[in-house]
Amino acid sequence: MSIDLDSGERLVLRSPQDALYALVSDWPVNGGVHQQRAIDFCRAWLAGRMPAETVRQAFILAALEAGVSINDDDEDGAGSSVLNPSV
Image (cartoon, rainbow, N blue to C red; front, side):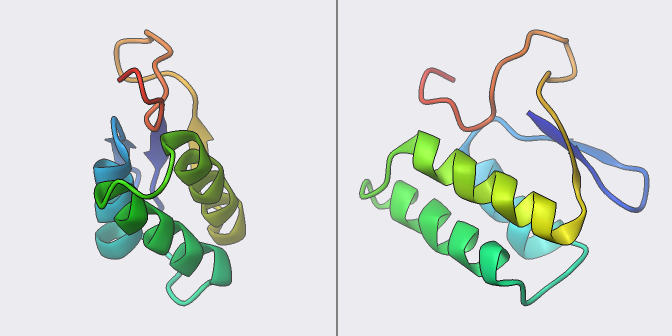
């Protein structure tokens, strides 16, 4: 999965850890309810307390809330999901 930022930059996200970095460092709208929930879920995944698919869904809601464009394919077009446990 990748996201397109307002700056025109595309970030490829391969894990909940990448998603956490994007949510904290690069997110265009701070303070959203879904953003905070996704941050909490990413941290829970890092602690082994949250399934990756649940984190993925929370991240998608945060992206919708912030108007961030989500792309299902990675840069190579392989279609691997950023928050897919198999990645």
